[in-house]
Image (cartoon, rainbow, N blue to C red):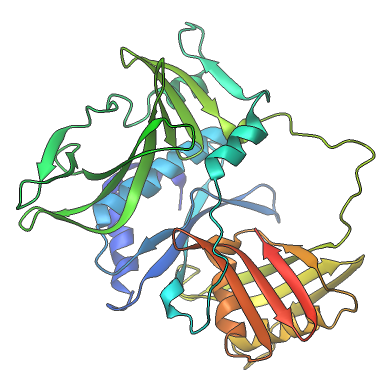
Amino acid sequence: MDQFNYYRVDNLESKINLYLNDIPENVTFSVLPILKWQISNRDYNSTTISSSIKVTRFTSRSLLAESILESLQKALLVYNLNIYNIDLFLMGRPWLNSNEFKLQISDITKIFYDQIKKEIYEGSNLALLDLNNKNLSEKALKLKKYKYKNIYMDNYGEPLLDKNNNFIGYKINQTEYASILTYYNENKLLCNKLSIQEFDTNNLIFNGEALISWTDIRTDFGFIREYGKLNYYYDKNNNLIDVIVNYSCSSFPTYKTDVNLNKKIGVIDFETYGSNLGTGNHQVYAAGFAIKGHTELFYIEPGVTSENFVNGFCFKLFMNNNLDDYTIYTHNLGRFYSVFILKALLKNKNYLITPIWKDNSILSLTIKYNNTKVVILD
């Protein structure tokens, strides 16, 4: 579908309605919005435009459409895709929650993502935009004019009270309601995490997953809004003064030349297809790994299920000699691929699996097979 068909929320909302109606009532789905476009007569490129979104059959169509549309518009801006015809796919998979596993999940590690990000990017040449410059580029202007620009910290909208007159959040506008979590971060700065959710106006309660969220951090000069991969800087008068685009970093930390490199590293990848022209329940049909200078590719045979195919692929991987203590990288682990791996291997008692979770998302998988242990990371 041409990308401009999606600029209207009602068009996207009608398609999402058909998608959600196919989800069983008692199932939570993890969906990943994907853009695909043709760059030549034979070649295609694709990219994810947001993190995975957990939805059910009863998720608000309008809020989900707003969330995806906003991510789509940012992707078109950042990746300069306006010259292409774009296909938008929702890659879906039934979600597995941590409480569904019949194994002991130990050593849950809390990852201080904000601190890591600060250490990585501090002093780097970030895409810092001077918003007071009258000669702003078109891209900078669009980054400045985001939807929630004029909603400020401690002034989010009309306060919401529950039936006991306890404060529970804000009415942002006529259609959007936000719950709020207030806390202090590791730097002792006041933080407000806003989550736009479905709101039951009759019972005065929030329902479902957050489809849109951001965090405001109070600073000496005003506040910082961490919104997706963008950081918006406001002064004390609530003027937007700067935008930092973290993923446009042009320089990266370097190591000393005398460092001992870890050579126990490999990669795996899966290819999936979905029923109903790519938008339905996805299955793995191809997989491959590259490890110790050796690469192997595998394709599913007729009549073989996706779970059995992934199980056989992992068996082939672990048959490599001296694989112990290897770190295996794959993209979209926590978002997507972990579901395929877990669903296949949990049926096989020969594997001991220890996932590490954060906020119900998987950060890594440690898998033991006989005397061999590997860690799979995103």
